[in-house]
Length: 131
Image (cartoon, rainbow, N blue to C red):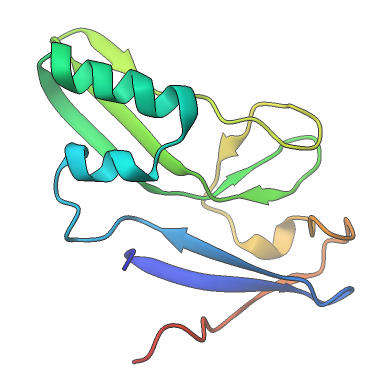
């Protein structure tokens, strides 16, 4: 289970999107976290793990937004410092306009719904989380 999980509902079209922040505490190694990566990023990270000395790795689900479309994304983000001076940190692109996404910490209410484009998002409790 990630550190935080929530849903955002659009007040205009009622679309609901699930978001996660952080990573599963059982995934305490970069080798285990690789399963969340896709395509070229997964290949590059596996190569770095096999061929280089990892100094520091930060990874987990994070919130990103498109600066043009103002829509939210939730990729499994990774940043690896290796061999004392090297850095690997992929860029994420918007599916609609191909702009580079920016990592955010702002409330989801200030972003647009991917379905209808309206800025009427609100957070709702995640039904999969039982306290």
